[in-house]
Image (tube, rainbow, N blue to C red):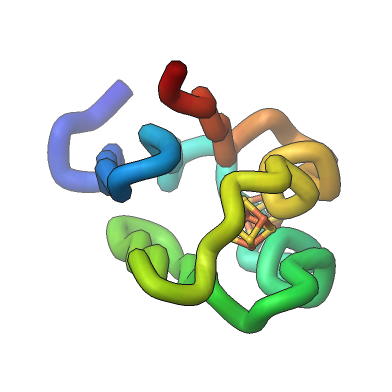
Length: 73
Ligand code: SF4
Ligand code: SF4
C-alpha cells in the first residue's frame, strides 16, 4: 500500500483508516453516515470529532474494504 494514499484519523471515540488504493470514490461511506461526519477521497480522510458517534456505518457501507473503523474502549 502506497504511503501517500493511506490516511489515518483518530478521534476520541475511534480510529479510522482509509486505503486510497482500494477506494473507488463511490461515496457510499459518506452517504451512510447519519451525522454527515466523514469526508473521504483518495488520499484524504476527515472525520468530525464532535459529530461522529463511532457507529461504524461508514466502514460497513464500503464495498471494497477501503475504509476501516476501530472503536476505542
Ligand atoms: S462512525 Fe458513524 S458517525 Fe462516525 S463517521 Fe462513520 S458513519 Fe459517521
Ligand atoms: S465507500 Fe469505500 S470505496 Fe466508496 S468512497 Fe468510501 S472508502 Fe471509497
